Amino acid sequence: MLEFIKRWLQPAAKAPTSGCDVLQAWADERQFGVRRVRDDGGVVIEGRSGSNLWRMEWGPAQRRWVRGFELRLRAELGFGGELQLLVMNRLLQEAMEREVFDQYVEGVQTRIDDQTPPEMRWLVMFPKLSGADAAPLQGEYVAVGNHKTWLARWLEGGFGAALAQRGLPPEHPLVLMIGRGRMLLRTECQVPQDAQLDAWVKCFDSALREARRTHQQCAIAPAPTTQAGEFSSSALTGDELAH
Image 1 (cartoon, rainbow, N blue to C red):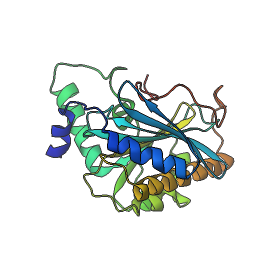
Image 2 (tube, rainbow, N blue to C red):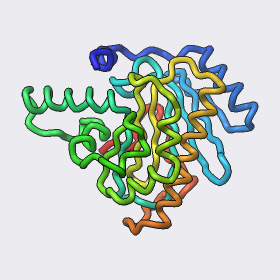
Image 3 (cartoon, helix red, strand yellow):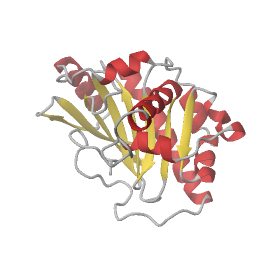
Image 4 (cartoon, one colour):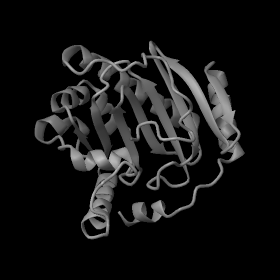
C-alpha cells in the first residue's frame, strides 16, 4: 500500500517516443485509426472488436495512483446513463479508502466534493459486492455500484473471470468504470507491448459484450444523448467521468 501512496507524489512525465512508435505500429498493423497528441506526446487509437467500437489512449498518467504512464480504453454504451459501477484491484481499493479516511476523517476537509476523482467518491458512496455475487473476481478485485443486480450479472457472464485471469500483480493499479453511459478502463502502462495491448483490448471487449448482455436482462434508466459508437473529445487532457 505504501508503494501506491508514493506513486501519488510522482510528477507526470512526457510520453517517450518509443512507446508512441509501438502503438503506431500496433494500430497500423490492425488497420486502426491512430493519431499522436502533440501537447503531451500521447497517442489516441480508435478501433473495433466485432461490433464494439472503442478508443484507446496512452500518455502521461492523469491519476496520482498511476505511476508514469497510463493506458485507457473507453467506449460509449448508448444506455445506462444513471449507472455508476466500479471495479478495481483490491490493493488500490485499500489505499484509496485509507486516503479517504486520512483526508476526510482525520484531516481538515469535512466532505467529499466534485474535485475528488469519481472512483474515490464511488468507493465511499456505494456498497461492495460480497459473497457469491463477488465470486467471479476471485478475491483479486472489488466491485461497487448503485445497481447491485446489474453489477452482479455483468460480472457473472465471463467478464469477471476474464479480468481475474489476467494474472496481474496485486500492486498493478486497475480501474474499470461505467458512468454517464460510457465505459472506461484505466491502468498503468509504462512501455506498451503488442501482447499487452491485445490482452487489454480482449478484456475490455469482454466487458463491453457482457454489459450489453446485462442491459437486455436488467431494466435501467434511459440512455443519454450520446449513442453507442460516438465519442466525445479526446480524454487525454481531461477527466471523462468526473463531475
